[in-house]
Length: 173
Image 1 (spheres, helix red, strand yellow):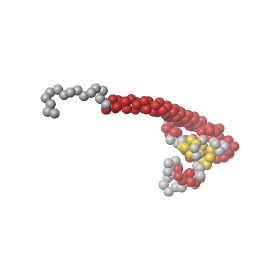
Image 2 (cartoon, rainbow, N blue to C red):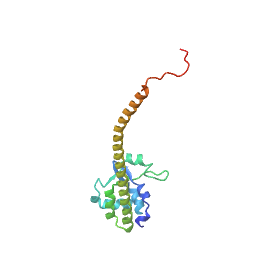
Image 3 (tube, helix red, strand yellow):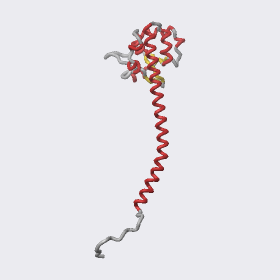
Image 4 (spheres, rainbow, N blue to C red):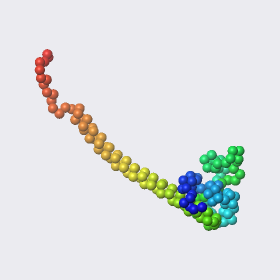
């Protein structure tokens, strides 16, 4: 499987924010690598030293249950037997050294590209938010100046500049 044949949308849809980290779950990674989740976890456990806490962590039962509807899709009537593991970007990169197959390499390339794309999108949103905030601050100053101008115009409209002219024609007063 070539990395180009894995749609980036598929990978991006499997990236979640858990405990403040962008992660992918072991079930989804196993699916992408086309291996059983059990095989993926066994490979990780054989190389546990490569996966410190900031590379990989196991979800709690509470996290697994609360995220089950949106993350873990099980067949009707099934329950979670084992808590899923969450892999950060660095943990996923480390998986390429543990799972050494052509497919694993291609999948890792696609995943790394998805993480880079996600970072670029988030960065552009931050830049846009900063620019908007700057524009708001500048317009705020202008709004005050514009308000002063409008106030001056209203006063000019309220007080006539010339005395009222005498009406032409016959007056009954």
